[in-house]
Length: 244
Image (tube, rainbow, N blue to C red; front, side, top):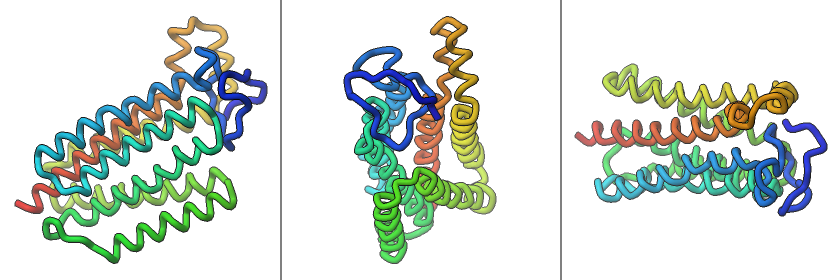
């Protein structure tokens, strides 16, 4: 996390419960964390294209919803990192839970009859989302959100490994690529958190063009956005196979 003492800018004092390692308002007075903000474009533009392609290809609405949910996460993250306001933080973090629930639903419905609805799974995921939302609004503890998000991601990873191992091994390359890219982003996320002081000191000593490459939270956005996009593609392909 960012050390105390960052400057204020257009959006005023920080009210979010998290402030990342990027120096606040260092690039422009109008954006609190510039690189953490613009890096969200990969979670906004490609998924819109993916949703449009899904409509043209006649894919089920749940896959269109997956792409649009990723776009919503990107837009929420843009608003959060641009302002560092608590309300915008919720606009980032809660859609991460909701989008992952959509992803989980799609993964477990790959082998069902086309256009069928699993109401039991749907109810479970909606209830999970509501409980996480209510608890998080009450406790305001980022670790709680991170654990809940991690549980959903772990579920997706296990299900994906099952599919590429036992059902569609020819999708193994795409499945493992999406997983590897996402995990690399998670590694960068941890580096950014753990070594923030060292990274900031390093950026003070090098030209900006080099320093920007150490904005590892921005890399987290880029890599997890790409990994999520590839995972939606992986799910849609496995769905197409199951329908024959």
